[in-house]
Length: 313
View 1: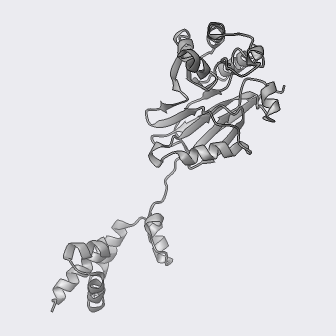
View 2: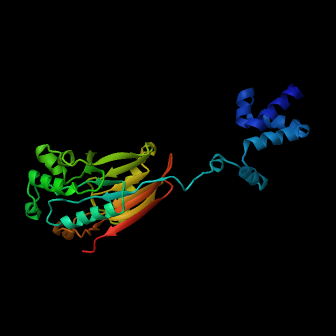
View 3: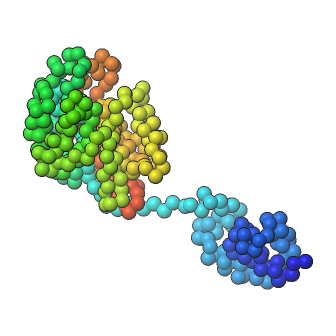
């Protein structure tokens, strides 16, 4: 038979540390612990028990207990969000398609003027910097600059006007030069533009304040039936530990802001007017650019201010 002292010890430990911990510590079953509780009178130790409870729970949790709430693990994970932190202002470009008949120098230069006026800290470009040259019949007639050298030099001249640091990935149009001749045109452009840095093919991460991850993404999929759907499916594909805090998407020439799985998602639009190919596929072009201003804390982005600048063409 178990002594009263032993039963008291087990029950007191359970009150302080939880039933599961007590069962493991003393090697008793849950049924035995409940039997000990029924036999044990802890009225004399009530002040000490309350002291341990107040040490374990916050005032808010104690108030919830007093109202009859059961503090599950989820209830104990109370977020503590502070809407203050460092601010960074980012100019967002994508799908400029330099060298296309449907690209206009003046639109890109106007974006650079706005970035300069608004004193952005950096500019990001999520792919299709150039138009490239595909094997699609008639595509050559939609180019103002034909071939690698012509589009390279045109892009260098224009991107040199960017007023601050520029970080870029390539897109599927840029990679037509890679597929046909092994050339990385965006990498070569950035090597000739002092403030530009090439981050890689199709996707790349930029870290803000060393901890906040901004991901650039291009892709080779098609437009979705709804503007948000493509971004939603992309976000669903991210593994939990691989999620960025901010996502900037290119490729579909659509603009939008969406908040999915705690990711601030921006679809970047384009700086290319609707082409005949897009019109034939009944695909609209959202021509314009973003300026986004995320609030950066040590481990989160509590909010993002954003402005979309459309070109009315």
